[in-house]
Image (cartoon, rainbow, N blue to C red; front, top):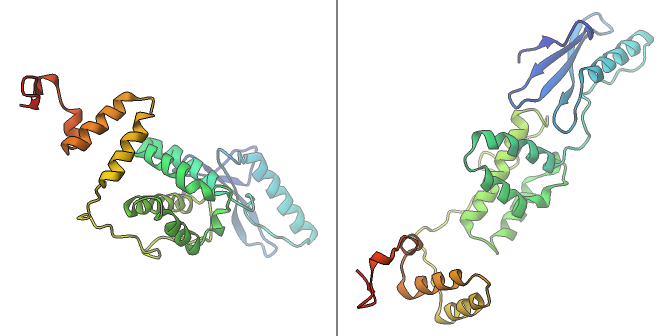
Length: 243
């Protein structure tokens, strides 16, 4: 932690530039016993916009209470609650600079994790994620559920690493939540009835190309990459077969 004086104008206020671009503010004073004290009083983020003037006002308040003998309760001035949505906003901005797959994280949050948007991050417990895991596995694959939980874990780790939240242990880190072990050998197939219904549904779709592509996939058994890679030169128009 590299603290430095804020400015001569605000003597007694120190700052610490955090790696995520936020700025932590500290005040320096002597307690009732004359002992030097340096305490963190706030953090400037995109949401809080905490300023050096706020920190200086806090220092004046502390000195006044010390001089008058009032009870001194000094805690960092931050919101009592830190919504999960605010943590994610900062996380995704940082991810845009460091992760090629940040759009996947954004999609996972919007579709699956926004259920926690207004929850105070410190209120999230292991049970919340166990319930989410059991609910999601009914609708999506086990692999997708694992990705959802892994993203949630990264978001919380970000909040802890960059001091957006204190005195909080990630409830789904270090194997606390048992992840699924998908069977990579399992294959799923359409029944004839399912394939027929799929084509009926797609015929009503406005994108005729999607319907034709699906017909080709179903009737040839080819992989998607193989079909999309086909060219007219690959087709023998006389025999109506692929060369």
